[in-house]
Structures are given as C-alpha cells and as structure tokens.
Length: 444
Ligand code: NAD
Image 1 (tube, helix red, strand yellow):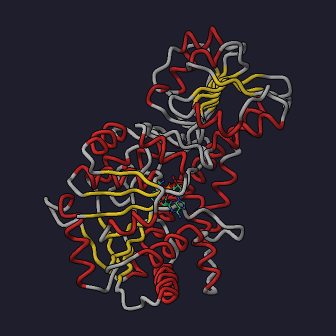
Image 2 (cartoon, protein in one colour):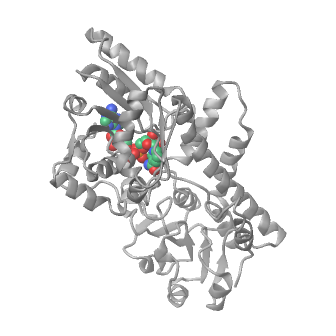
C-alpha cells in the first residue's frame, strides 16, 4: 500500500520503517529540512535498537523516502498518517498546532480520497478538529466533494524497544465508524495481525481516550510505588522485598512497580497533564491524576535531598559522578528526565557533575552546551575520578555489575546514591562503600 507519514520522530520514523519492512511504500515528510537531509545521507537522528539497519535497508530498497515536500507526500499515500509532536501547551493541554497544520496541508494538496490516521497522542475530540480543518482547506479550493475519513490509531511503542514493539504490537487500536476505513486499516496492519487478532476496533473518541487512560494508568503505578517506597523507609521496611511480594499477585504483576526517581520522557508527564486539563474542560476534578503528578514531581527531588542530608547541606564546590542521563535505558531521550532535575539542583547548590550515559551524551551536549560545572565523560569509570559520590539516575544494564573495588578507589569518599535500586545493599557495604537507595535503609 502507499502510505504517507507526517513527522519523522520516534513514532513516525519507527512506524515508517516497520511498515516499509513488510512491503508498504512509505513517503516520510518532515518540516525539519536538516533532519530530512541527514536521513537521506544515511544518518539516523535517534537511537533505537534495530532501527538503523531497518531504515538503511528499506531506504536502499526504495520503500522508504524522506522529503520536506508536503504536496508530493500527500499525493503519494492513500493513507496519510499524522505522527507529529503534540507538546504540552502553556495551560497543560496538548498543543495541536502541528497536527492541525498537517490536516490543513492534506486538505490543501489532496486530489483524491484519503484516509487520515492520527497516530500522535491527541485529546478526545481531535478527530473532529482534523476533519473541520481539512474541510475548511478543501472549501477554499472549491473541492468539498473530495472524500476522506479520519481514523484514530494511537501508538503504544516504548522508547528503547520501539522497533520490537511495532513489529509485534500487543494491540492495534483503531477508532472509526467507517467500515471502509476499517477495511483499509486491516489491510495495512495485516502483516502484524497474523497469529491472533490484535486489532481492537472502537469509536473514535474511545480510541483517543484509550491512549491517555493507558499512559495515566502506568504513571499511576509508578507514583503509587514511589509513595510506598518513601513510606517503607520511614517504617523500616525494604521496598524491594515488598515489590517482589506484591508483584507475585497476578492481579498486580511485576511490570511498572519499580521504585525510583519518578517517570520522565516525552509522554507520561505531558499526557497526565493533558488529561488533567481535558477533565477540567468538562468540569471533572481528577483527584487521582493530580496526586500522581504531585508525587512524581516530589520524587525527582528525593535523591538530591538524601545527598544534601549526607553532606550536611553543603554541596558547594563538590563534584559528583552521575551515571545515566536518559530518562530510561536504551534511549538517548532526555526529555523530562529525572537526571536533569538532579543535575540542575546540584548546579544550583554550587556542585559540579561528571556525567556518563551510554547513548545520551550528544543529547546532553546539545541541551547544556559547554559549561564549567559539567564534564561529559567517555566512560562510566572516567566519571568516577575524584568525585565525592556516585549518583545513579538511569538503570542501564551496563551499570548493574560494576567493579565496586574501582568505585571505592576512584571516589574521594566511597558513597553511592542509587536512584534505581540496582544493587544489593549488603554487597555494596561489604566493599566498604556506603549505599543510599530508594525505599530501603542506608547500608555501609
Ligand atoms: P518527535 O518530537 O520525536 O517528532 C515529531 C516530528 O514531527 C519532528 O521531527 C517534527 O519536526 C515533525 N513535525 C512537526 N510539524 C510537522 C509538520 N507540519 N509536518 C511534518 N512534520 C512535522 O515526537 P514523537 O516522540 O515521535 O511523538 C509524536 C507523537 O506520538 C506525540 O503525540 C507523542 O505523544 C506520541 N507518542 C510518542 C511516543 C514516544 O515514545 N515517543 C509513544 C507513543 C506516542
């Protein structure tokens, strides 16, 4: 099938590559000319396991094309997929300006029937706005007779395993009341829907809402667990034991109950806030969502507070090794990453940071540029040299079994503040290192 994807970000690029891999002809269009140019030269702008080879092979085979030419792109696809960003607006709502500018472009350029698929995370009611925007553009051209459907098809990929998630989706949500559009969507996704039925078809508003309900549920699990962790510390319990104890109940499960520094990334924070805003628009007070957000904001400060207490409030002039900058492992994404809040608090207190992340070093360089109080180190070992403590903000696999001897030797004072509970406190203490983590008694 001929498919056009608007927006070559995490969602657009990965979906485009996966759909090209199964044989569809995909034209990807973005307003970022530099990004398009780099992609055409074979440079992949984001890190996702397996993505580079997939894009390179399908680009070479001509099944995926990158352009800034919206007119060409609209002409190409019977399906027009919108995967542009929906960042947080000033009032917390999702800003739809990019989505609606794509709807306008499709309305201005289309010459035949189209199925417009909203893949971006958009508030309930957005399909109506996309339809109105397209109709207005068609009217200006006197082409109101051109038919189109607007389908909601939210994306559930996880950064860090985005390619695998799109290749083997848990579910494919389709929101439409048109049988013809449903049939086209079934054809598009047939290669991913072979073993058992994964497609769940519903009305458009329910599909739009499903995405927010899913992300808010996951954010709630994280904030709940962080609340339990903070309480466990005060009660003298070990949250890691509690986690295993409750996870063994299949009604609770082991996923998403890891205590830590709070959720970050480009989705959970903005989607929780956007749903709070949506609820407000219809006069509903979402007490639970407010608490989820408040707990998360407070959680990002927990490690810093422990550090400050350890050094009796005096962090000025100290240097800290920081392992992990990305908001989670297997990605270079630092949007709303807890590591940023931690680093910025350290700088505000007059401390310096020696940071290492396996993938997010370029990203950190771009965000913070050159500054005296940040050294970006080539290895995790280099970050330790002479530091007053080691701080851990992201649970990269590569951090899980370090040489504790080396850590003790390299640090000026042997203490680890672990925001991800990577280690057994008894093991760290045995190496003569003080160990402070989340929801557990300090050891050593
Ligand atoms: P992103 O910021 O990585 O990419 C968005 C891209 O859209 C950018 O390259 C930007 O230049 C481009 N763009 C903006 N306006 C455009 C226009 N008029 N025409 C063409 N391109 C345009 O965003 P993302 O992380 O891929 O997220 C996209 C959407 O998917 C958001 O709504 C997000 O909430 C949702 N989502 C993201 C994830 C994720 O893990 N990142 C997962 C599920 C859903």
